Every structure is written in structure tokens, then in C-alpha cells.
Image (tube, rainbow, N blue to C red; front, top):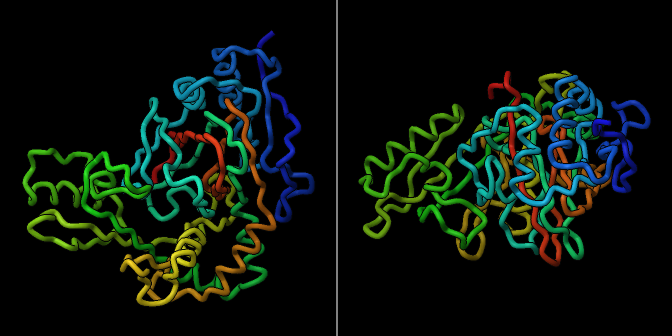
Length: 363
């Protein structure tokens, strides 16, 4: 008898509020019908789920799937599992987060310190080039903490519009603007969770390139993001290439490409909470070390009132599912409909990420 996936109880799941029908489970958890299924049997079950259209229906209804009891043993098995869905691998352009590739189209999810949370965001929501789907795989479970909070972006939009319709109107009219800073440094720098110029945009730069050639290659890569503007800073004899500051002006609200539902799709809450923690919410947005770390702005460059961000935080904490992890399990997020975050932890927790586009998707 072939292995299939069937709904399974999962304690962290919650029921989505309106506009979803009653008893809409988030995330929906699926488990293989045979607990000792081989990797090849799991891959066949995934392909069947995708090719029959069941997967699209589940994601349209629930937004996220937690696959439990998979028993995937390492990054390479996870890579095979991710490829079985039949999507196109997503290409990172200008990634602000340092990741280490461990298998084909699989990398560490985030290498920031375990004491630092990652705040709610849509994956690459601060870029015009973002993945359609995100998969996370648990290599090692945390001793304590380390949950992955997820939120339904359609619910966030609805509740936000009810609470602050004037804010949603401003977002829909102006969009939002993000600022990212990439210091000059080596491709293999590990001192920071952020990325250097070369890690973000230096794919085609050679060690033998002079400054003019390196900059031309970097700027050509940046131009692949049609809304990007940039400036070189801090050039000196010791730093001839200079550091790079990039701005993106983007929508903060988007219609889901398949369901048509309107979603709160952005990274503005994560930028706000990072600036709040750093004490850089107010101009000139610099901390004691002089680091410029502003929140997100309206698209015209004006400040977004903090009260709107605080409302967003309240809604997010009230409606989220706090996903807990077991080694070998995977969660699949429809990036258009789901925001995710990360809680601090103790122990050896490690998550791997795999980002994908639909074959017909062009961002």
C-alpha cells in the first residue's frame, strides 16, 4: 500500500478567525500513513499531493502545512523533499541575512545569535524579488524556546483595516520604503548575521577585479531589483570599494496571486521592532555606536506613527500560532499569506530553509 499524507493532531495549531470559515486550522498538520516510511515513499507522497492539486487547495485554505513524523535525517534528505514539490528554486538577490548553503537549494535559516528573536515578516518582503514558498526543516530541536511563530497575513490585513482604516489607506496610497546597509567585507564573513556588499550583490565579482569593475558588476546585480536605489559610502584608501546603502520602495499590501485575498505583505513590523530595541526609532535613527538603523518609512519618506506598529504587534501576538519543533519535521509556508518569526532558545536548535517559486511565477 502506497504512503499518503493524512491530517494529524498538532497542539500549536490555532483556528483562523474571519475572513476564514470556522474551524480553519493554521497550520494544518499532515503525517505519513506509515510511520516508518522511507524517504523515497515520502517523496512519492509529496509528488502525488502536488500533482493532484491537493497541495494548492490546502495552501489556499490553510496557508501553512506542518509535516510531522517525517524523520528526515539531514540537509540532503530535506533537499530531496523540497524538490519533490516541483517548484522552481528561488534565487537570492540582495539577501540581508547571512546563510550557509548545506545542500542543493538548502541553507541555514538564519545565523543570528540564539538570544536574539527574529521579528515577524514575509520572507524577502522588503524586496520586489521574493519567494512564493518557504520550507523550514528542523535538524536539531531546542532544549527550550526556539519556536517559529507564524501569522496569517490575510487576517492581519482584515483586523488592521478594522482598527486603523486610515493607516491601510496611507499604505495603499504611498507604499513603504526600506533601507538596507551592507558594509564592505569578505564573502565568508561570519562576525555578523547581516551580509557584506559581496555576500549580497557580489556573485559575479572576482578577486582580481579592480574597484571600478567590481562596482559595475555589483550595480548590475542591484538593477535586477527594479525599485532599488543605492549610494556608495565610506570610500577610503583602506576601503576603496566602499560600503553600500540600498533603498527599496514597495507595496505593503498585496493581493494573493491565486486566491485574490488581500494580505498585509511586508517587513515593516520587523524593522520597527529592531529599531525599537536598538533605540533608533526617532531621527537621526542612530545608536550609541553611530549605526543608522531606522524603521520602515512611508513610501514618500515620512515617518509611520508608532501607534500603528504597536497595534500590529498586538494583533500578531493575539492571532499567531507558536510552532514547536521535532527533529526531522518540516513546515511549508505560502509566503504570500503567512508571516513568520523566531523566538530565542537554548540548546543546539538548527533550522534549515529552502525558498521556492511556482513555475509560472515571475516577481
